[in-house]
Image (cartoon, rainbow, N blue to C red; front, top):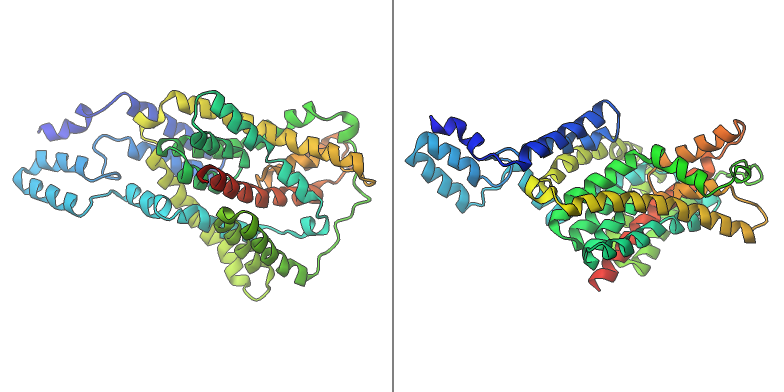
Length: 397
C-alpha cells in the first residue's frame, strides 16, 4: 500500500508554496475580477504542475506510481510511454503552442485586432507618437535589469513587461530569454495590466498639474473616417512594420489581419468569432499552458522578486513617458493636448483609456477625453508589438 502515500513522500517545500500562489491567483480572478480569463487558469495550472508525480508534465513520474501499484506490467507500460515521448498534456500544449511555434500568443492578436477601432488614431495621426514614446519604460527597465544582475537577453525579456501586452511579453520572453523566466514574466505582466486602474492615477497626478488635468480638447473633434481608409490602414501598417521591424511582423501582421476582418464589411461573422470564441479559447488555453513554467523549484527565486519590482518600474516609466511626450508636443502645437492622454499609450487596451477618461471626469465632469485616449491607446497597442520585434532583432542581431 506504499503507493498510496507515494505523493506525500515526494513532496518538496516549494510545492505547497506554489499551491498557495495558485489559490491567490484564483482568488484575485474570482473575488477581485483581475484578468479572470487568465489568472484563473494560470492559478489552477500552477497547482496542477506542482503536484508530486503529476502526469500533466512528463509522464515518467506518474509511472512510478503505477509501478508501485501494478509491478512488472506497469514497468512495461512505463518503458513504452518513455519511448514515444511521454509528455503530459500541459507540457505538450506548451511545446506545441508556445515553444515550437509561439502560435498561441500570435493567434490571440487576431482577436485583439478584431476588437480595435483605429478610427480615432487615423483621425488624429499625431497620437501615434505618444503611443510610441509611452514604450519608454521598456528601455529604462532593460537598463535597470542589467544593473541588478540580468544578462542582456533576460533583461530585454523583463523590460518588455512595459509593453503592457501579455502576448508580446510571452513571445519576447520565449524567443530570447531564459526559459525559467517565462512564468514570472507572464504573471507579472498580466497582474500589472489588471492593476492599471491602481498604478496609473497616482503616477499621472505626480507628473501633471491640476491646470493640465483640466485642459479640454473640444477643438480637436474625432471625425468619422472613410471606410476605404480603415481598410487600407491595416494593410499599410503591415507593410511598414515588415520593412522597419521584420521580427514584429507575426504580431503586427496578425493584429492587422484581425482588424481587416473587422473593417472589410464582408466577414462580420468571422470578425465576431475572432473577438469572442477565438479570443476566449486561446486565452484559456494560454493561461493553463503558461503554468508549465511555474514549477516551484524554478519559480521561487530571487529573480522572480526582481521581476516583480522591475515590472512595476516599467509601468511607471511608460506612464511618465507618455505624459511627458504630450507636454513636449504642446510646446510646438497650436492645439494643446491634455497630457494625461499620453498615459494611455501603454497598450493595456481599453483599460488605460478608461482610466485617463475617468481621471479627467473627476477633475471636470464635463470634460470628455475618452476618444482621444482611445486613439493613443490603440497606437500603443501597435507600438508595443513593433518594439517587441525590434528588441528581438536587436538582441539576437
